[in-house]
Amino acid sequence: MTIRPYNAERDAKAVRRIWREVHWINSDDEEQMMDHFLAVVRAFVVELNGEAECLATSVPGTFRYLNEDLCLSAITGVTTSRVARKQGFAGRLTAERIAADVVEGAEICVLSMFEQGFYDRLGFGTGPYEHKVRFDPADLMVGGPFRVPKRLTSDDWKAVHAGLLDRCLSHGACSLAPPRLVQAELGCPAGGFFGLGYDDGPDGALTHFFWAKGKEESGPYHLKFFVYQTYDQLLELLALLKSLGDQIRLVSLIEPPEIQLQDLIKQPFRGQMVTHKTGYEQHCRASAYWQARICNLKACLEKTHLTGSLVRFNLSLHDPISDLLDADTPWHGISGQYVVTLGPESSAEPGIDEHLPTLTASVGAFTRLWLGVRPATGLAVTDDLDGLPELLSALDEILRLPVPNIGWEF
Image (cartoon, rainbow, N blue to C red; front, side, top):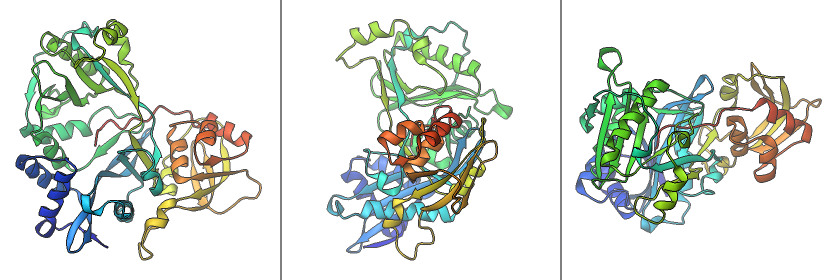
């Protein structure tokens, strides 16, 4: 097995075959969009018998922690061909991709998982439940006015990307840097699509918009992007969406942070019962589909500013990614002993203070704690985290954070 950077001239045919085998693409047009995608991502491949048989890609970006931005590595795809399964290639390749990103400055890494458990081996911890809501837009209880929107097409990818970067950012929000990543997504011909929005920003910049994908005249449509800068803009988008309800019978979207959409839907339980087991079934389903891991503990805690009484403790941290990295890889995870301070100014310094209590954790469990996914007392029951009851209670108190929401499907 050889791990090396992706080379378009040498590997394009092989990686297209991989994506066709796993049905990520199914047409020549989609191959073209894949080429646009591969031109902007950072990609490693596993070479087997002279051909690429496994591909892992990432892009740089930012991750919002409360009011601070961290350097992000977003894993945007891990795929293995049919002939290379169960050889350990995907885990090792992804580990090397993450390590290379950390060397280039990544402080945290986030990915969408195909199933829970696989990426735990690389130190990832599962994010919170996010709600995917399916509803009839005609049932929205928003009575405010809306203006005639601007029609968006795939040619507007630069404006869409800029709008995504300037959106209202909540705790946990991810922003991906390469604009052409959006070009590849909007240009994908699978299914129908349309975008509507408003360019109220300086020089006509997009301020609030949505991008819908679906196949039938009446839906269902999924709102892949639902972007706004203010809550007034959110309400205008919902009013615009409601106006489409005379033709479109169902839309779905990931519930925006800090908003409970059920507050704005007329008779949601009636809608669920009436549409049960139909092609236009309305429901709200919770799914924890993304995972994250701290890659630079010192940097992450330096940007952690919390309210409440100081909490200081020893942290005995285990990082399983080191088992998947080659000996000559410059970064081998963040296993070690640290003295951690959490408060208005937080820190993590190597060492042990014998006068402090000790928290023992995997990097995935500690990442979940630090993000506010679940409290320490809960993680001590279900995850790899352990400490004295007094310490766990103190951590519960200081790490009462907003629910993290990545806000960008990738």
